Length: 315
Image 1 (cartoon, rainbow, N blue to C red):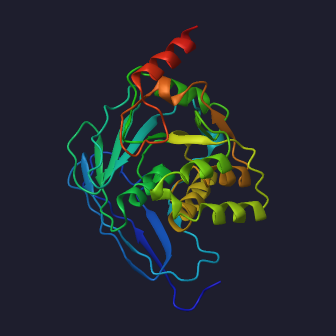
Image 2 (image 1 turned 180 degrees about the vertical axis):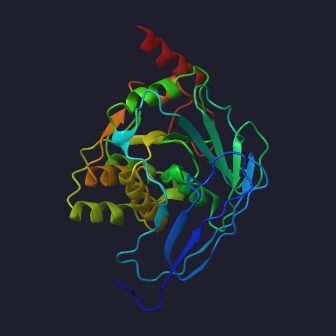
Image 3 (image 1 turned 60 degrees about the vertical axis):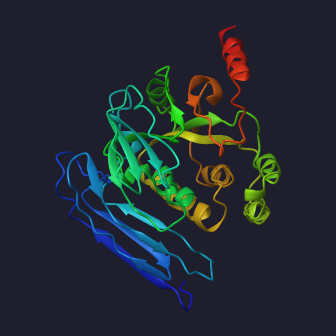
């Protein structure tokens, strides 16, 4: 269905040349379809195998949101049943927009490390430069929701830019977690439901204006029971399958036009699509390292608590 005043714009980028390795966009061809009031196509082209510059403008002037969906399609598709997980190569991916973070050390055990950013960043990561007119927090949601667009391997692990892996924990546990599951991540260490998360976020002024209650009520009207748990989405291992692409498109849509806090929409969308979700046997405050940052006001990062949690785990 098409609403008056909306344009349906699509583009296909088929010539990402200048790379010595596989194209960073996950395939030689990528197609993007947007329902938007104004959109400009990107101009592809890489300068080296370390830095690829792309351009993408999103200027959304949408009044009618019924049936709205972002759809990113890759020309390839890896079927999960055909991937032998114990031998498959894995990518790790993160994003930095607005200069808010420094690149973390590249985690051990991955075959590719991809950093998506709005400006060139020199580091040990392969840098994909993708400027955006979106707010930095929202721009970084694209590689979080659709890492397959940027990674050349059939398995990826998204990590927030404040996450590091000093104990070489991630690669082994991501591979093991995906042996039988479509994606794997941590349970939230402090809350167990979307409703609990919403009520907690209301304590902070920057979240109070978000339509969290409205989105929750819409999910309830669609049959959401809020019994799938609550997840920490700062680390997500996943297989790159068509089913995962569809999930990523839907997740990005609800983040962009619903609530930017992606933990709110994640449980409903994985339940609706019957995805097999694995949970790490661990705690993000113990098994990985979360660099302190003002945005991380929903976790406790005190040294005393981290030591207590680690000692409890060793008992």
